[in-house]
Every structure is written in structure tokens, then in C-alpha cells.
Length: 110
Length: 118
Picture 1 (cartoon, rainbow over the protein chains, first blue to last red):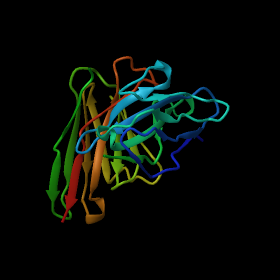
Picture 2: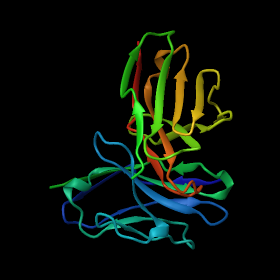
Picture 3: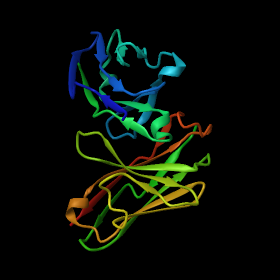
Picture 4: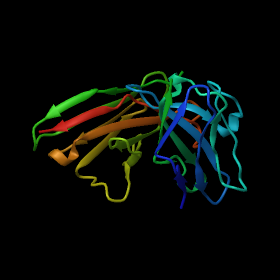
């Protein structure tokens, strides 16, 4: 069975500090990993996907198959980064469905 | 970009009545849409997968007679909460896969519907 674990429900950092939102997954095969973000009073939207290998809004995430992790990182957090972040996995065993982690609420304090 | 429109944004209904929620893909065709329930400060719980032209696939524990899903066209899926009860009060969200229809392409989400059953 595929599973996504986000161990931190809440994460609080000061503006300008580095931030890392953890995501671990279990999946037998080659997964595709995503980070989705939900800002206050807005819909869920894609932040980035591992296959793109790009930086969005200063965030990056590297798929580490050895550690089965896909942590989201940003070197200098901004107040506008405060949001709910979900890690998600898509894969062949549940083709078409995505499995979501429980989400991490990030608060960036001034 | 791919846009998913969900309507209504919020609805209040009396216990025992039925409520229909619409999910439309505005600028792309979606053979598959997904319906979720989101509890406060919690993750998305997948309720069912809506397949155009065929029956929806429900997740374990989700009553198919309670949550009726219809996906009659490539751009519209509807979720009807039948004989609603206060415990059905929740935030319902739909999503659809993007243009490539690849199983692993990103999801595009509706804005959600806040259902309150009194």
C-alpha cells in the first residue's frame, strides 16, 4: 500500500530562517511526488513536482529514494509562505489516485 | 492553465434534504475527477473517483447510496449528498487531472464547498 507521512502538523519559523517540511513515503515502484500548497482562503494548488526539478517561489524538493523522502526546503522563509502544505504521491498501484499526507501548517513569523 | 470550478462555494441545508455539488473543468476535458472531504486542519480524505461514462469508484467506508456521483460529460461531475445529516457537514473538494491525462500528472482543485447541515 502507498502511504505518505508528514511528521510535523505544525511548523513555525521566523522570517529569513531556513525551513524544511518533511515528507516520507512508502511505495513499491517508481513514485511521482508532489507538493501542494493551500494559502488562507484559497484553493489547493500545485507547488512543485519532483519530475520537474525546478524551484518554485524559492522552494525545492529532492526525491531521495534511499530514504524514501521528498522534503520541501526553502533557505529563507517569507511571511507569505505561511500556508498548509501537503505532500502527495501518485503511482501505478493506485493509478489515477493520489495519496496525500496529513499536511503541515507552516507559520512564518515576522 | 487548467481551471476547475466548483459550485456552490457554501450551502446550508436542513437535515433530511439532498444537496448537489458541481465540479467543472473549464478549459480541459477530464475523464477522471476525484471527490474529497476535508476536516478542519486535517488532510484530504478521498471519497470516490468519478469516471466519465461509468460508475464511480468509492473508497472503503464511503456509502455510495449516500454520496451519489454522476460524471455525465467530460467537463462535469456532480456529488449529491442524499438525506443529509449534521455529521455530513464538512468541506468537500473536487479535483481533476490536467491536460495530459497521465495518471501522474498534477491535480487541479476546485475551490471547495462548505456544507452545513442544520
